[in-house]
Length: 247
Image 1 (cartoon, rainbow, N blue to C red):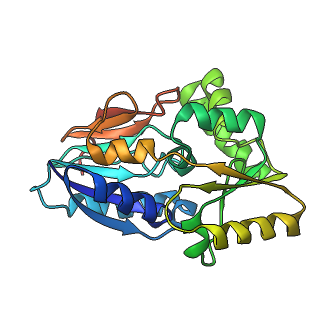
Image 2: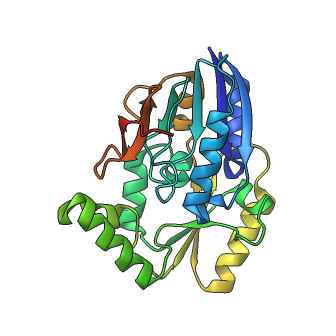
């Protein structure tokens, strides 16, 4: 197959590493890290790149999670889209939704670091966190979820996405085993010490990124066929397909 890969530069090393080992021909395009802070802008940029993609590709693969619903509402035009069923990129660094859920349940106040975050950081910050957001933002989002998905699903989504967690007490550096991460790990450890957080190094898992770029799309990936669009499902599947709206 020939694949077009559109991903966040926060996953630059994993994307290039897995693309180099894939049996398929892959063209990679990275978008700037930090766009997840404005989901509507990220969605617009992703849709623009999807619409501009040549129809010579067998599929467009997105190395993104749901990312604050930035990926919800993306339309497939002439080429199918393949998207990991993940709430955010932390799932992609850990290798599975189950491992993400385990980390959240046992360490909900975690601030996450990886090598690309620290190497490419700018004014958007240097890490990602489960539990980010103000109380007002959380209450607004919860009300929106209740109205759209019902109370039970809203409670589930708020738990999984960490909206109730406001304070951090742990820094986790995910070592993906690509290159020498000693310098960036030391930076993360220093940041943790300055903030009084416990520090832990965690071994990452590239399984989801590797499977996405290898074309192994069973179970853990949403396939959006031409004429369809993605939407948030409000359950363990994270996303589902819907009939695409008119452009």
